[in-house]
Length: 629
Ligand code: MN
Ligand code: MG
Image (cartoon, rainbow, N blue to C red; front, side):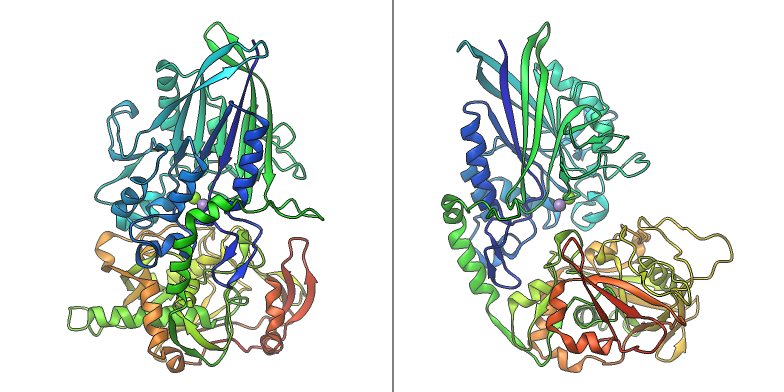
C-alpha cells in the first residue's frame, strides 16, 4: 500500500531561460531553465507517474529576454511563460519581482500560462480575517494524482498547494501596488489556510513559499519566514526560495535552530531551496502510507540537484525544446539590444563601484538628474537644488564573481543601458531637508565596516548589505570617515547611542556647507523612493515626482546624447584618510583586465577567494586617493 510522490521545484528563475549572458554576449553560461529542463526530464523518468513540477516565484523578471519582451520581443508573447508552458508545470506561485512591471503587465503574462498561478497573501481586499480576504489570484490549488502502489493498485492523491510571498511587495513596488493591492503576513496567512486546504480534502499540503530562512528573530511581517512555516501543524513539505540559497547543501553545516542539511528538513519537515536562474532543481521524494485520515508521509529524501555539478562533470545540456520555445524572442531581444547608442572613450566597469565614487554609478545618477530636471522645469520646484542618488547594480554578491558590468571603450548599444540599469525601475524624485539628506548619506555608508587606525587588511564591506544599497548622491560633495561606527544596520535600524557622530564629513553643496534646514530635490528610482533596506519610507507628500518613464530609457538617452563627455571628473565622495590602515576588498577577477585602475587606487592583488572573487588590499592612509569618475 506504499506509494511514492516526487515534488520537483524551480525557484527564482529570473528570466534566465537560455544559457546566455546578455551583458557580455557570452554563450554557454552554467545556468538557465533550458539546462534545468534536462534535469527535470531525467527526474520525471526516474519517477514515472508520480511527479509534480512547481515554480516558487520570481520567474518573470531578471534578463533582457524577460524585461524587454514587450518592447523588443514577439508582440504580446511572454518568453518565460512560453518556456514554462512547454515544461508542463503543475503550478507556480508569485515572487516579489512579479510585480515589478505593474499589475496589467503581470496579468497579461499570466493570461498566457497554461498552468495555475497561485498566491494567498497578495490581496485585492483584506478581510477581517484570512478567510475573508479577497486574494489577487487563487490562493491555492488542489492537484490530483493517481499513484500506483507495488501491487499495481491505483490510489487517488490530492495535494493542496499554497502560495506565499513577502508582504514587502507593498514597499518594494508601492508605486505599482499602493492603490490596488495589500498584503498579509506569511505566517498568519498560512496558519489559517493550511487547515482550510485540509478541510477541502487535501491529503498532503505543500507550501510554495517565496521566502527564505530567518536569521535571528523574524517577527511579524517577516520577509523571510520559511523556518517558522515548518512549525505550523499540517505542513507536509516546503518549497522555499527568494534568498537564492541552495538547500540542502551536503557541504553546509546544519543549524540547531531548524535547517538540517543532512536530512533535508526544516524542523523535521522536508524542504528544498533551488538556488536561482535555474541553477538547481529541487527534488523532494515522499513515501506515503494510508492512515486513518488520508495519506501520511512515512519517509522522505531531499536533494537540490545542481545544473553545473562542478569538477570534471559538464553542466546539464540545454533542452532543445526550451531553446526553440524562446528562439524568436531571443533573436528580437538581441536585435533590440544591439541598436547603437553613442560611444565611450574609456571602459565602463563596476568592479570597484562599491569602493570608490565610480563611473557607472555617476552616469546613471547624471541621467536621472537630467531627466528629472526636464520634468520639473517651470513647476513649483524649479530652482530648488537638484541632486540624484543611485547605487551600483552589478557588483557580484550572490550573483557571483562574473556579475559585473564590463563595457570596453568603443561603440555603445542599448544593451549597455540595460546592463547599467538592469531593473525595471521608473524615475521618481523626493523633497528632502538638509538634515534628511545627511541621514540618507549615513544610511548609504553604513554598509562599510568600522576601521581602526594603524591596522592593515581590515575587511571593508559588511556582508549583510547587498551592493545595491550604497547610494552615491550626485550634486553634493562629502567625505566618508570609516574610523567612526555606522549609524544604521542593513534594515535601517538605528545602531549608535546618543552623541555618536556620523561618518559623513564636509558635506557641501556648491562649496557651501549643507545646513539642516536646506531644501533639496533628489532624483531616485522608484525602488528607492519607497524605502526598504537601510532607507526610510518618507511621508507620501515628499514624493514630488513619480513617472512611468524608465530609468533605463533615461540612461539610454544620456549615453546616446554623448552625456559621458560632460560628466564632472571631480569625485562626489572620498574616504577620509585613516593613518596606517588598509582594507581588504573583494570583486570580480575581471578587474585584472583593468590594470590602470588597480594602479591608480594603489591596490594589491591578493589572489582569488574560494568562491572565485578577487581579493585586494586597498590603502586608506591617503597615499593613493585616486577615485574614479
Ligand atoms: Mn529572487
Ligand atoms: Mg524574491
